[in-house]
Length: 523
Image (cartoon, rainbow, N blue to C red; front, top):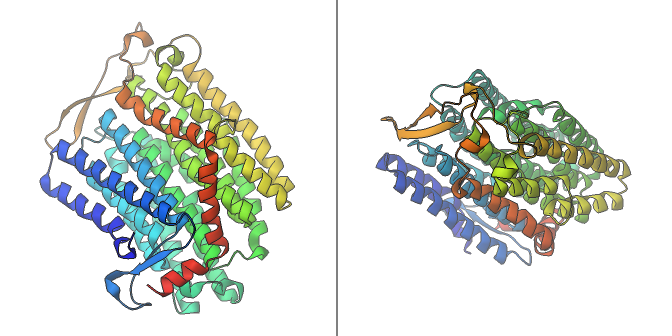
């Protein structure tokens, strides 16, 4: 692929978003425009993966301005893999939103496309200030998607969650911008190629870079700045929770990997800080799930815990550690989305995700139960799923690096993770069929579109005699996204050699950033 085409990963979704706003409330056009754009983006990202299978990088300066003035877009194997998985998850979550009736609002598709443009730009840019800009491009449509998730008017939890999400991200973006300003003030540039290795020789650049890493750690939900995610993510709709789980925190993790590899050149003096914080993130995240009573709250805390595993790879900063961390990152994006989508399908159809208000769903919904079971075992790290390969390779990398304490933490956290997954399984899917007797737990049934382009919803009445067997089943349109992603994690487990090989190429690019830096310099 020509480097000059890289800006299209941002430009095309933005132009399609504008076009969909212009055409108005034409649902078929919105669906085709959204899914068609995302499928094309994934296809282009796959082409990049094929191009980088032997390493290397390509870069392009926007409008062919000279180096130092042009906005640099650069891609290597790590970038390409992230583009593939983020694009694929956007398609799957959009599919779920369409099937659940949440995509009927006239602004849903344009907002998702603008979000995609921000994600792609953040993954491709080699300029710290433009990383800030693209993160903001990600966040603005996210606020709108949070609002669209409410039914008529938000509940207290939805309002509180949205307020926390907006406030936290505004604060974090401010901290990140301050860090970028410090870097420019100390180094005279925010271009990653010109900053390569400077933090190892200039303490002021190292401190400035640490401010940026701290801001990204907040966005990634690293302990002790993790609580916002568990409170905010369950407050929106299942489709948006799944979408955000695969995009927002993962872009922050990508930024941490990239900045530490390029600016800090993997400086070993500070790695112990990362090992300590990320092990604490594993433990505190999984313990936070113990007392939760809803499926999405449990899964949100587990998301925090798994972020500790992912970031441990960069804290080891060895070839094996980076390979395992990148593999874990890609695996987790898929598995966590699958779990949110399977439990989300139950929540959409049966009106509640609270443990104990439903049981015996597996007897009536075997397809969605199997999808959840596969993803749950993968998250816990059992063979033959991708989670086993991810954790096993990370454990081997930790042993090789002499981090035995981290190995013990990973094993213990995996055990508690499995117990938490069994808690959801026993509380929702296993046992005798039972539905809540409360009218407040009735599922939202999509009705005709409102004049404003939204979807009016009505509560399906539920009498005390209503049983699970009397409710409509989860159709394949709604179950399909969870089944599809569960099948991917099984495929990645059985055919792990392919993704491990690609992750190894990406890890080599982080250990030796010469190709990345030279590509940007020549752009």
